[in-house]
Image 1 (tube, rainbow, N blue to C red):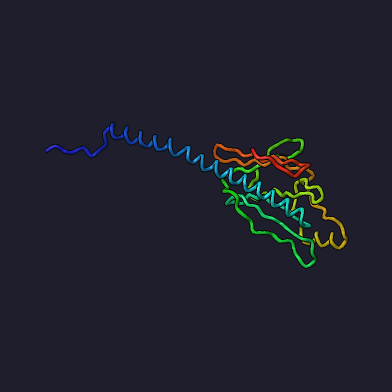
Image 2: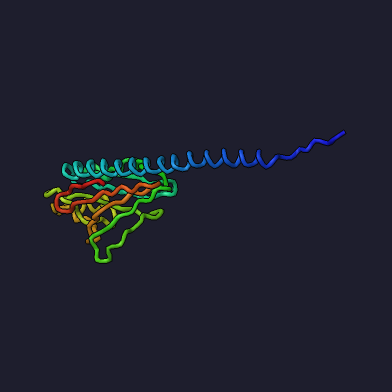
Length: 193
């Protein structure tokens, strides 16, 4: 009696490898599309946050937006205060706008012209000039309640702790797509591309 060969033939292996190659060519571009979609959605969230921050900054004593990278993704938090003595600066719950696999970076008007990619634990804090609606320089920290109280007692405007440099663009990259939000310093507007 003849023993059966329990192995695979070369033809069977070629067919399986061909099917796997075809499936990979279908799946890989779709994964890139998913990351591109997430980058576009994160850029839209940042644009919406800029709009909300501008409205809040014009109507309140303090209206700041913090874009921050955490271990599990990117978050936006708002810091708001109406300037009433009984009220405190409210920190709205952080809203996740994208996963950590995205890359969000920004450029400034500094002479180095470098792109600064947000690393875990780093943040970008933006606000607007209440009088003109223009962007203020990038903030080094959010305004604290004790700072607000000091300025209120002295009947002075808030002196925001800025870096002296303006954010000129925010770049969101994921998959094959990069979305650029160009900030127009003097008008407080932005353009997306």
